[in-house]
Length: 145
Length: 145
DNA sequence: AATAGTTGTAACTAATAAAGTTACAACTAT
DNA sequence: ATAGTTGTAACTTTATTAGTTACAACTATT
Image (cartoon, rainbow over all chains, first blue to last red; front, side, top):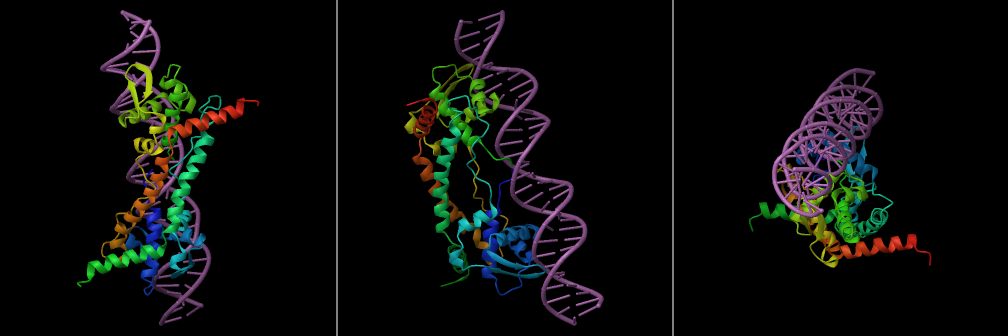
């Protein structure tokens, strides 16, 4: 498949809503910042709504973050838009073989451990961190003292 | 794309080579344990060879592990066969926007942290752990005391 | 109330990658 | 020599993401 940028784009949308809260936030404007189409943005926003990370109103361009920045973690965002995993047990293995008959359970457990480590890290990074870093980088770029 | 089982299948191949070291290890036999085709197995074995995790001989069905079980980590295997990541920065963002112009660098750094956490965990699990768990599960299944 | 603009969603196309298949040259072992 | 095997290329199938087109439903404004 294509490599997914849904996670990156979802973070982008949330940061954009925060940073540009004073302008009219149409899906078109957000899309032009991401470099994609308004429909793709609306699709992601629909998932972010469902995950209760933002509020939206049909017909009105006025999305709002549903929580404080520090209460939205990368794990929350990941779970909202990315259903795939890198770690997929192959469930076609031969049950009549010592390896094929047992490896699925074994890998399932190990993969859960790895994903746990990943999720712990994802949960420790919040949208506050992302927005702060974006604003600092921007300041470095524009400031002259 | 399809969900990849390359990582799981590569682990399967290595465990199979260890556990069934006394039989003739053709790609056909390994494939029937995984539930795939011999060509898929040979393709993965080619990558495992390139990563110096196994030795193979063209024309002869006699693959050997290149290292001790405890010296082959899941991270080694992952790197050998899986080039994709869950964390892809979207590089089409608009550079003239505060968010679009800075988020790529910011996410790149955060993603590196998350992958570091994941890799540390993957490096801590070895083929020895996998083989042990498989044999324990098999013993539980067949033993009666 | 009519109009313009927007969201939310469905249906479709295009692009990409994994898995599976077919084929075969090169090699090994007997 | 012969049979069996590996390694690899080329192709097909299948699944997923991204992008596109279209439109009903809704909101805000005049």
